[in-house]
Length: 277
Ligand code: DGL
Image 1 (tube, rainbow, N blue to C red):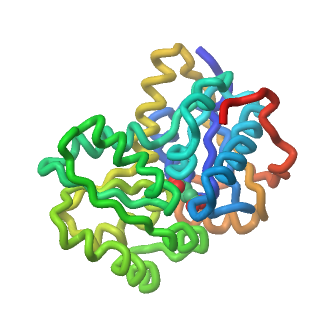
Image 2: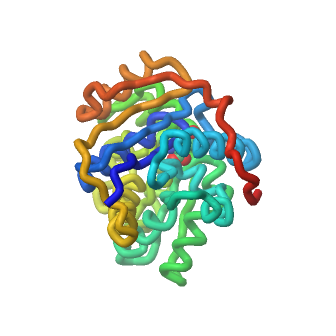
Image 3: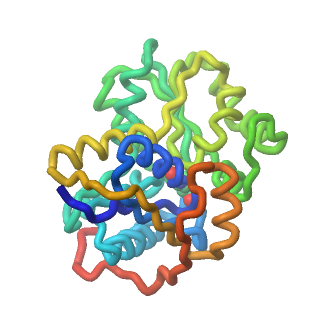
């Protein structure tokens, strides 16, 4: 048993979709969440900058004495080198592998759509994992860079005209192809899954990275004897104003309901050991 909290981070609010799932599958775990709201979005930046930011996010969580770290961010999960993940003093889990596995299991016709940030799609991380799972699958991929700012600014809710118009622009062509499964390759996207679902159609199964990775994390903690027995407390940390975080996260996460939120200076945190690039 290990009663230290689980550390979760994202560039912003999207990782809360993973927190929501973690609270369902691991209700007795405490969680420390960091959202880098002062530097979101990550997805249009270069791999070098994303890696620098991710290292600081990890350093902050390690300073909170977490027992494991989940990168609830498709972009960081796509960029962070495996050697760096393995050099950390606690288990590290990204979202790509579990999400790709779930999609490979869900598809019937082997044609899978992948959407994500520009950095994620450019990295081909999901495509590589999908091919490991399902050698002959057909993949249709598309970067959707406007989705993250839309979510961060609260353009949510079925039928939202602005997000619907952008979703049509990004996804109508994919919807005309024969995909039967769509990976929401960025943790922000489940917050607009209703809008995305309306564009691609009800026959397409949407795969939520937070959900799949929360289940995988439970398996890992179980295997390593790291499960805890706590009250399920969550502490939130952000790098920008606490007020806007509270307003928007309350709007889409009913169960967020009032955990403490603190603003930190993320630039003060650096990994204190030399790590592989
Ligand atoms: N939630 C992040 C992801 O899963 C968004 C990245 C961004 O900030 O652009 O990729």
